[in-house]
Length: 511
Ligand SMILES: [Zn+2]
Image (cartoon, rainbow, N blue to C red; front, side):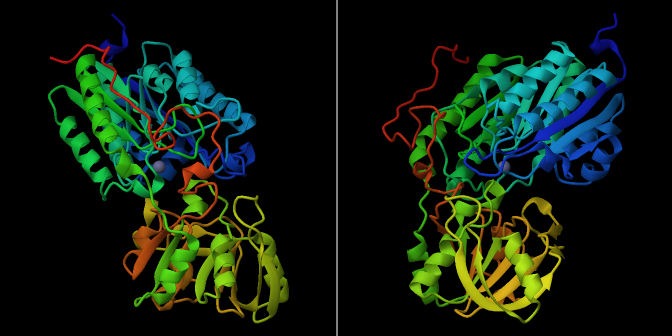
């Protein structure tokens, strides 16, 4: 009698690989970029995550439970950008598997994944990781997986693990809590007190990024239903994955996942109820964004200020390069003045530094990364501020970040009345401290261009007269019809508006 269920101390491995891969974004997630601060092991992993609100913090919480030995192994994390290179994936996953093999045996493995990772040679990168982890530890070990809400969940992911969930908030504020649920269920499974079974429904529907906020309709209704179903007898966990529409993979889209105790029919029924509800709501999931020209016109006649224009096509949190010039170019064309606009352009920052504070410069800024994000725009103006780009925001911002590092920055006041903040690293505009740290008073500005969809809301909703989502081109455009997919499912709503779907009735109906 020496099976895992009979040992008093259960050994739990904690590890993860977190990347949201935008397959339309130009900059690849290379090994070099992962290794530049994104990989932590052992004590360093604990130091970095235990006191955060991240998934790993929820896993590490169970270290305090009696009869649990929690062993932090390795975690790899990188900001959203293009696809993961084969070299990065093989190196990092190789290290994960190596650590699992050398530090075992295990009763439980807790795996933090994003769910929308795409590697150049393995499009279902999260499924590939789950498959390799399972192969390394064997079928008896309990495998628990915690995913981001933007996961594109594949069958392989669900079938490879014992417990799986996603966040239920967007912006994401419950990562730690949801991970703790996975950890608790996995440990209870190892102890033999529950027998989780997972079922998933994937109706062919995509929810536009503009409709994904869980505090707003229509998503709030779906999340309320998920919470109600989660309270049902025998239901262990219910998840709603919104999906990540910028990853061109067959499983792209929404998915609904339920975990029930020993009852596959019950889990299937819960997942099916959510899928049916979502399918009925599909027309509400279509996003409508305003053209740049219309938004600029509205901003100029707005009685209140500042008006915040959300540059959805250059949503840095979704993997874009932060150097889109579509809005600035349109403002120049239409003679609209007084924009605050940031752009990632390290070369232009260098030239400002050479010219010096107060100097007049003539630069072609932004639009350098690719053809999707506009052309470089000529600006002539005075260098008003120079710094190293580090600033701090003790207030509430998306993701709970406090310390920011934009790299060397230059603020130009242009002759046509704009404030152009040049950064050396891609920056979404998620903090008002970004502006105050360069001597600007956000409340006094007329128009603020914020690169993002949901992430700037925490910073700007309290002061904005109005926030307008723009239909800008780019690798995170709200207009999904502008992106050329090769791997997605067909039919898929709203790409194919006549798509039909009914739940899989071949599975036995619940009692
Ligand atoms: Zn997410």
